[in-house]
Image 1 (cartoon, one colour):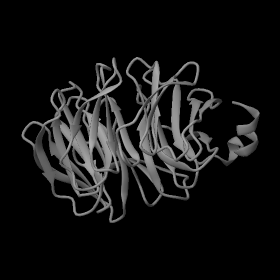
Image 2 (tube, helix red, strand yellow; image 1 turned 90 degrees about the horizontal axis):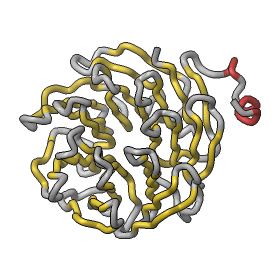
Image 3 (tube, helix red, strand yellow; image 1 turned 45 degrees about the vertical axis):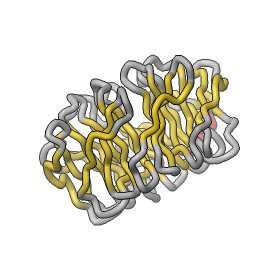
Length: 305
């Protein structure tokens, strides 16, 4: 652990269950682990910070955007980091920390990014209400996802790569054919902005988190609501499945990170340490660690074990 981090947050001052606290600037967007779990990317107001997830050391700052960075995603091979800001997506060499390409088709902030499981396509969702599918080999747009009447807040692929889900401020989630970009169905039921959507690792279920305070579970095959997993009565900003699919991590307005059973919603663990809303949440690939990004300008790494 580097000296600067130790001086900022002595180990004794870390909340129970936390391994590290990061915080160099305002955290405006999401956070993402590298595919091998060794790094954590944090989208912020001055760029994207890359941290060593094992030691807590700062690795690099991906700086170049002239506006806030709202979204970040690693390619499946870990060689590229994609960052989304106002109207632009930048692709970075993850080793050198240098930009490789700029993608410009959106007409507002790029709020969400996700690579296809095979790494051949990058999907983006924007505050301009559209999604775009980018051919990774040519860096050209190959399809546009049109159907939302509000900002796309979250975008994700099914594990088999056949379906894309987008969550929007229009209170819906749309499922799209990944190969063509054609819409398949709309998930309705939330009564406020849907901030986050994720597939279960086996692809059978979809979980959504909304500003209406609920986390809802959907059958991905029959495309219907299964149940309201939890109802916290406060904004839910982030939801994500554990790699084994048994639990779901939830981040919300009260600043607490909760791990709940993926079937019945019962809470198995709570991590408290943020003094602001938890806006983004991510499991490490091995499931041993959860990272939470907050409005309090910090990211905490929690030891799930």
